[in-house]
Image (cartoon, rainbow over all chains, first blue to last red; front, top):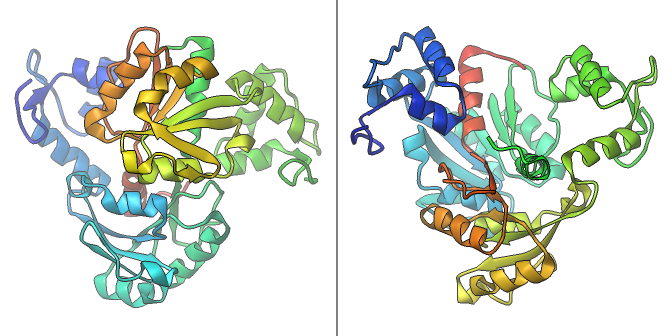
Length: 190
Length: 190
């Protein structure tokens, strides 16, 4: 391995397999589907591989998103330093709490919820991260869909009724901990 | 469906399939492996099903864990109200920042990192949630393993070198957002 964007120039399917817990043969097969073939004893060029994968995911251009709800999770998201490296930009942050408005976190100003419709229209933003209290998350999704938003990344542990033409991803921050307990109890290494 | 622990008494594999995005036939097959068979037109008794699944995972007894690192994520974890319902209790919280010590969040007092070894020994705790800055997470895992901890739930987006006899689960809070972009771009509904 040699140094590049992340400190490494090329990487073997063996190393990728160890990191991702996927069989190296499967890594090679999957990557061959997108036209990438590693060279024996050298592996894959990382910058090229990243570019191909980012293009497939759709983050080869910076994806601009907003954060709705600036509690602990929202603030953690705004404070996260690696958004640009992951292909994202937090273009705006919104909260209903007047006391939070005007606060600037990591260069991003917190605005009132009422500003969302004009902001996303002006900025052409379609994706929102919702770090709202669970009780209001579905309502927020509905409102934002009416404002023209189409993608919702939801931190509330509920099943969202997805508006027509929209897409929702949830994160459950507890389930990996449940899996950890299960592995510990049954001595399951990865 | 009728009302029970979560407001519902019994549930069909069709409903479970819709919620989890798994084919009902697969739900029935998987549950039959653990001895659970739904009745046609009635489904599964939810309380019994939950008890069986919680026993398998190992959370039928309350799992006591500690939180190390009380930044935004740590505070969000401490503030989370549904730990008991999910089978967990946050027994203690620890941070290196002296200004945070003595703070009580959701009934849990923040203590200094130096108190971890005696605390986990006295309380018989084996599992830690690490919401530490990425740079020190591996070091913390190593230290905690020396203190007898065996399970680590890690919020840092890094590959942890797992100490012998220990188990690690990571969470990557960005990857669901990447998948959302991919689905949006390719119009992939669930």
